Structures are given as structure tokens and as C-alpha cells.
Image (cartoon, rainbow, N blue to C red; front, top):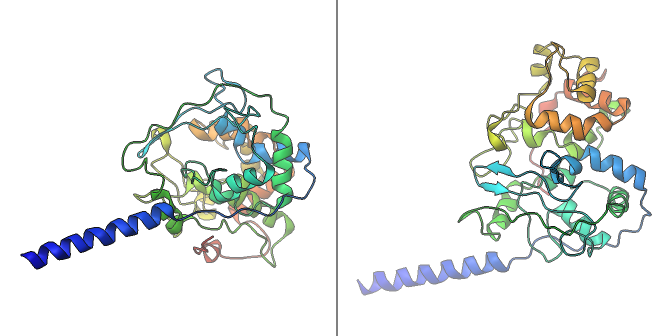
Length: 310
């Protein structure tokens, strides 16, 4: 009996040490200085493509641009997209370009706290220093709003931020948005947007019980989106079966109208309204070309979905 007690105490001590190590384990790394000069116009375009305005603005509730978005109701709790205006207290007005880069590409706040993955930072991991500089320049033009967004409503154990370190180790994958040799410039531009900035896979890929994306079913659809909505499959096969073509898909990304004359609803309507309709026709066609895999060069999309961890 005494031996059992000693063993139990030893196991508890080891568990406490392991827990302490995880809590103390730092995440992220300080980026090198962001040297490029930012282009405001290009940054505003990238912010639209990336969903920054759609997520961080509660226009339906009468909120100011980027002052905090509508709540996202999930199985893990309700997340409130934060104020990212230039207010130094309620927003990001006291950040630097480097702390902004760390947040966007690594999902880590200036004080080293990991962000909840309701923020789709894994899709932005391949943003270049020029991308970051452009975004940062654009955000500097946003008028400050002094009211902070409400705190997240997340219950135990999901409110324990240290647990996100384990989540990141398991599910923070590189977006693999870089160019593929042998494919056209348009197809590769579509890949860059779809896998990166526009983060289509955030909604259109199923997730497991921990909220990690199923990399074996990229773009296969998701029946459990925040708020109870669904995202249909957008694999080349599913899109072709649905009668989509490059012109009709590009048009839908601009108008929200489907080939049948129906209109997108739910979160996809917001994506079009606040995001893709502002893209160039060339970029929308590139996204459609990639999603339908309609490039003249033939490649099995599934061969390029392996879990390359960041």
C-alpha cells in the first residue's frame, strides 16, 4: 500500500512538472525587422482578400470598420473578433510591424500569448515581409475606436491558453500556398489565394473533435461551422458535378449568385460581400481555375495535401 502511495505521488509530481513545462514553453519567435516599405493600396487589397474586414467588423450590428466583429459561436465557446483599429488601448495602435508580423504569421500576441485558432493564422504563415509591410501600412490608416471588443466566452478547459501550445504542435500546418512547377501562372496565383489569404479551407474542410483540419479531406466540406451553418465540398470533382465552370465560379465570387440563379447565404454571403467582390476579375478567375483544377497542366490535387508542419 505504501509503495502504491509513493508511486501515485511520484506520478502526480511528474505530471505537475510536465504541466509546468508546457505552461512555461514559449511559442513563436521574434521576427526579423520588417524592412520593406508598405504599400497602402496593396495592403488594403490583401486585407480584403484575407477576410480581415469581414471578420473584425460588425456592420450588421452597427459597428465601425475593424472595431470588432460579430461573435463566432462554436463548440468550444463564443469568440469575439477583437478591435484592430489604431487605438493604442482597445486596438493595435501600440504595436510594431514586427509584433503585427508575429500575430499574423504565427498566431502569437505581442506578449507571447497564443491566439485561439478561431483566428485563421495558419493560412497566413507564408505571407512575405512585403505582404506584412503592406498590411501594416494599410492598418495605420484605420481611424481609432476606443471601445474594446468583448472578451471571449470560453469555459474550462478550453479557456486555458497553455493548451493551445499542444494544439499548435498537432495542427499548425504550413498552408503550402507556394507555386508548383509545371503549372500556369494563373493556377499558381489561385493556389496562393485559396490556400493562403482567402483561406477557403478554414470553412470547407472538415475538422476533428479538437478543431484540427482533416488534411485527408481538404475542401471536402464541413457540416459544423460556427453558428450552425454548413460549407459544401469544393473539390474539383464536387464543383464539376455541381455544374460549376471557371466563368460561373468567378462570377459567383463577384456577385454571390450561383449558376442556378440562387444566392449564397450565411458566411459565404459575407465572404463575397466584404471580400472576394473586391478582388480583380483576374484573381477571381485564378481562384476558380485552381479550385476546379482546370489548368492545362494536369496534376492530382490530392497529391499536394500532405501535412507539412510549420
